[in-house]
Image (tube, rainbow, N blue to C red; front, side, top):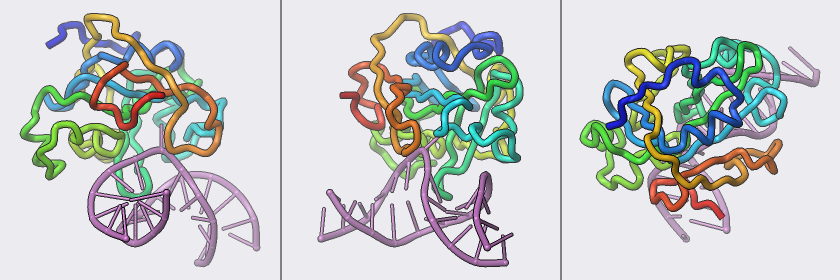
Amino acid sequence: MPKTLLRRRFFDRSVHDVAPELIGATLLINGVGGRIVEVEAYHHTEPAAHSFVGPTARNAVMFGPPGHAYVYRSYGIHWCLNFVCEPNGSAGAVLIRAIEPLEGLAAMRRRRGLADERLLCSGPGRVGQALAVTRDKLNGLALDEAPFAVYAREETPEIATGVRIGITKAADLPWRYGLKGSRFLSKPFK
DNA sequence: TGCCCGATTAACT
DNA sequence: GTTAATCGGGCAA
């Protein structure tokens, strides 16, 4: 298990710097989680971002200080987890799309109702369910305090990039990042 | 108040 | 490859 906890300073930078550096980092919530293998970057200057419309009740956390969790409801069904980045006001966030399960496998299997390790956290909605992410419990919480723990990677992996998944606006921006060759990606990179 | 649609998933054919 | 499930945000009326 990595030892260096990522503090707020790490997230107080451009999403375009933070997102690729999160590939290979370890995310735990209440001790349950694993290695981040896929993320996407969003920024308020671009219409796919929730912050593009300006501050609202839903996206308020994105306009707050970096290093905090932004949780939103996806398709009325799933909870998705983001890390707020950028200096105050720039309203950027990194969506956690897939994790390689390492800690708390039993809890994740129980929450997902599934045995297949490969399908536990390979998608943003699946990550939310496996790590018990909900807005009322986690939205706005600091990422360097319990129940969160995010650890820096200890080796620099090969990063794959591509266009973001499931969006129609700004669909051509290559702001999806993944761990090259990982079998826990939500979709393969081309 | 009503309507449209989405940073998805799972179960189909 | 197709589609139902499900609900709140954002905007028009």
